Image (cartoon, rainbow, N blue to C red; front, side):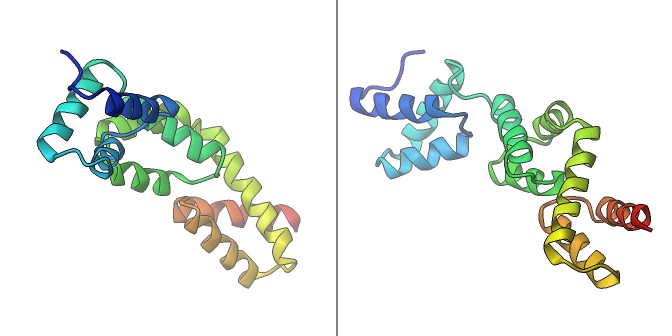
Length: 157
């Protein structure tokens, strides 16, 4: 399959997808901003997938790993982000399983809770509730966050 005609556009799109992993949705939006018609956008995306410049599984893994390790997002927030990029449920599951080890996930949540409790400078039920809410906003599961904060509270007693 040959690339769609257009030298300058080809350079721009290749630079865009080679800079970092991209989703098909991101590439489609970029092509739209460059003035490419919908039928041509699909042709470009198909060519990029065929030539392995775009790969949904690779994108999902990079996204999940980066958001977890750099921004310390929980699985719920990562899943929502991947769904916003139209990533399949299969690739979301693969990315979470391969990029977020369970032990590291729990340790990250615990570290975030400890830092947040120190920042609050208070202890007690209100501080614990605020910490659980903070972890939930970061995308961690509500039940896991509650268990984590409860265990931190009990370890201080």
